[in-house]
Length: 305
Image (cartoon, rainbow, N blue to C red):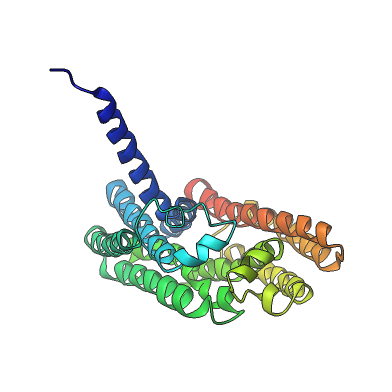
């Protein structure tokens, strides 16, 4: 009796695709940012915990971020179908059923909160719970389709990870994690408004009231420029409060002034094509801006301070 090995290879391929689809459901790029900023919050804390507890705690923070991402994709599956930026996600392509996505998000939420509680403390588990609930109920369900200020208020969800990292080690909240929270909170609007400028038609089709859709491009550009200025002194606070060195100070000085310059250049640009090109540059540069702010804080606290 012969065995058809092709059936096994097909099943093996199907399993790989399913695993990959569920992994994509967790928004891995967002997860990587969450892990990184939570790590910075953990490292700068005055209390040191074991490597094992640190790794497991950060793992469950990442799982929590993945849970929020899965719930977000479940709720927005119909919107994602009409947007070029999101139409290739697992749910619009039918790789995963909506019920499976919802169940996956709920299970990951429970696992992440429970796991963080056992490997860390109650406070960090509570902050993670608030983060997941805020991202899903406040941002995804309530704000995103209701107001042009969706990303301003909703951005708080992405600002919680360094606070969680700090509480993992200290079981309290002080000025340092609040400053890191504020940096991400005030960084978020200009970052996503820049994206909305060159993806404006997508947001119109999806009927999402981004600032560029509701108030127009010129008003959005003004707000990007204003927030780039507001963000700059806030990014200097780690140096002012002495949990970052001159390496961080000069990095912030360089990136902050460049970001303001790019935002001003975007504000002054009237040509639509050039405007979209500069908006894309602002969007990409903002990622590097945030990365180097947190990288230098991490470098300062792990090696220098």
